[in-house]
Image 1 (cartoon, rainbow, N blue to C red):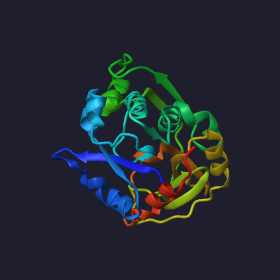
Image 2: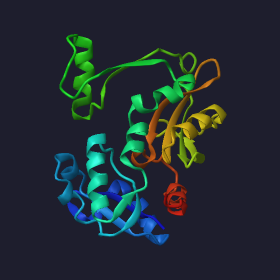
Image 3: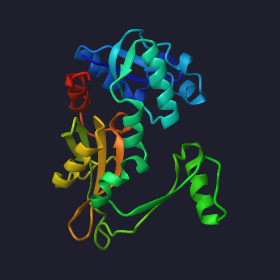
Image 4: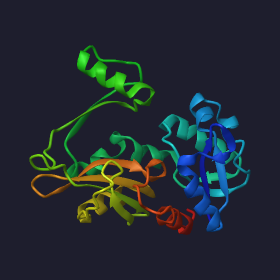
Length: 249
């Protein structure tokens, strides 16, 4: 059985961050080991200190916690591997699902047309509009500025139906409301999206979908499932259970 790695409470480093406490409690109830990562130290670049509360030789593990920039995730995976813990989503798969340039070509038929300007955080094109986009992202700018074709979702004053789908090894293990619209519970059509997910090759991903005004479901965003939040009202076992049952590869 894989272990679950999550984020430590900044005020109580040996406890799980309250946002993820129910998930780690469920993992323990189901018989899994839990390790805690200091997210602040990880983002500060002190990876060795960040993983000191992860037991050595833990074997395969899933991460369930706050978002991690791709360079930090790569460093985390490398450090954990040296300690005998193998993330079941490797750094290449994480980048493919977490950043739009990694998944866009595969999902192009089912998502708005997009273009992006590559650049590191802090490099701002000489236009006020793009500078404002960068300022809003602060340290979380990942890869550059993305421009997407406008598509109309919803109709009139009615907000578009949105859904988040969780995929594990190419299968939808959980379909629910998007966290931004927890009161809605749509059932999107997934056949075209499923083909894209299978081609992406990442084991654990999410797809956020919105219903266009012409009745077509469109992928708004793809994400790594380890850093995607559960919608309100879902029990942690709905996602922790399938993760613990997944075979190591």
